[in-house]
Image 1 (spheres, rainbow, N blue to C red):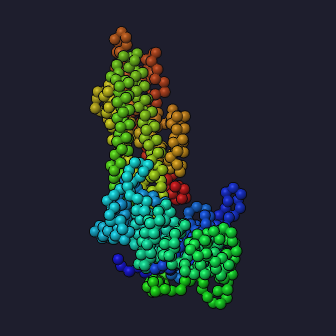
Image 2: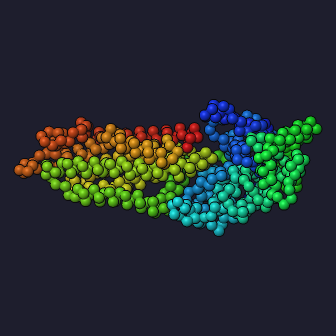
Image 3: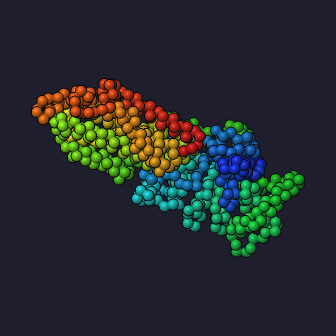
Length: 591
């Protein structure tokens, strides 16, 4: 790997204020935190729950979303930080691993390489970069193993390996700065130590690494370089890890022998947190009065190379080298391939979808098997069977879309917010992969139902029937997508969807147009017979011109082509509306 230029991040008097939704009062989350994160060193932020460590990490990483006001100064190599450039040279590993269960370890990192590395970079070079990351993170042995998901009964890799994959996804673009939010949470002691060893190794490659951490053991703390301790949004200590114990002792809180210092610090902060914050502020003031820089750890032999790299970078601080983003069409191509693999890798989910349509097609076909042409029964059987089919294609695709949204949302939120691809590319890829699948499933349903029920035995009639049901089904699926997008949980999406389908179904126009099209297609080409054998044209029955036979409200006065055209327009409009909703939710960080 080519030598990385060191990046030094200095932050001064960083404050974050947010408004309490209930009381309306302003809450100080960060209260003037000052410090420095340097290359070639592992900087650790600690504090009790609610101390503001994750908020500070988010501020430094430009990963802070939602309401709130940030003040203070953040410098990158001595120059004011430019968010657009800084996010290109930095990466952020979330506390929660959000990975696609149906992808292998190698595929997960390769997808990141395809979407994060320049399009001008050859495929061979990208493969070599992925190989390098797998070696660095010791993932070569499980590179062809699925990520897995216990909820889907899909066996996969261990928790420690999942965390390394998350790091690898961010590491693939060779970031000069790496932020991690509690990377050891949920790992056993051995895996946690191994992960910290990996972070130290990455830091020694002249990277700037800053991480929050929770309850580290003594083996982990021995690997810290710089240490920032927060209490209620204020600094209780910042400096060398090796100087923390002496500082607490000087403040009247000596750490007992054989006690893990971090455990002691946490317990002391509960009792004397405010006193320790005041002691640190006093020490800072004394240091400034003497012309000292207490925030800057003294250089060590391990950081000399980083200092040299940072100095070189500071010569042109405003010109951070960033890689161009891959084109939109390429994002769609890569995402489409991943979505297709997701379905093929999960045959249970794929087959369950197909089975539903086959079962319902056969079920309706058996209930209305070979309907007669009798005026007394044939009219109602045809009308009822088509209405039954419409009901099936209202609920099934929309509920499936709503239920699957939870996992889609988490992955979309993480990857889009970290700049892997645009929301428009994801939506286009999903539309391009789901639509053919929905048409295929609906075609199976229609073939079984149409010929078992015994509608007009004409190929053109069947194609019209199929077109109407496919468009109706696609609109229903889009309604489910819209309900899912405006909620953050599939449970709420299903509740909204149930209200729409159960209470508004008869008034929803897309159902009216689809039903009118298939009914006109059937009745205009069939002849019924009375009990006396007298023929009655189906078109007269459809238009309501036959006494004693009522199809009230079915004929809307439009031709079959007009109904299908309007139905297609509704599909396009609903799809556009779904995209607009998704775009707004993503833009406002509401996903």
